[in-house]
Image (cartoon, rainbow, N blue to C red; front, side, top):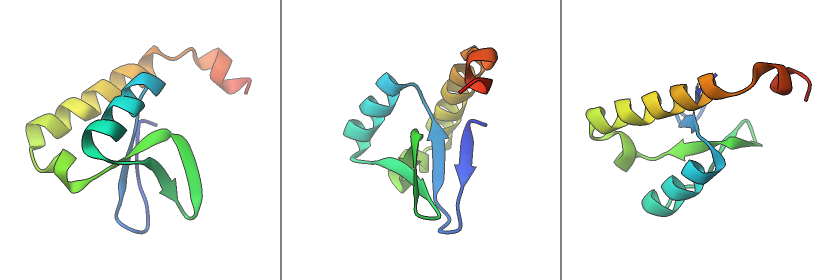
Length: 78
C-alpha cells in the first residue's frame, strides 16, 4: 500500500525516510496516525498538499514508485 485514509478523513501517503522529512518540514506536517497508532512510514497529507491536484498526483506517483522499488522479500520477513 502507498496511501491510507482513516476514520478522521485524513490521508496518509508512504514515502522514503528522506522524502518524509522533506515534506514534514516543507508543509509543517507530521507522521500519519490512524486509530491512535503512529504509522511511521506515512506522512499526514494536509489540505495545502492536495489543493493543487496536479501536485497531489505527483505525490501519489512518487509514493507508488517508492513502494514498487522496495524489496518485497525483505519486507515480508520483518
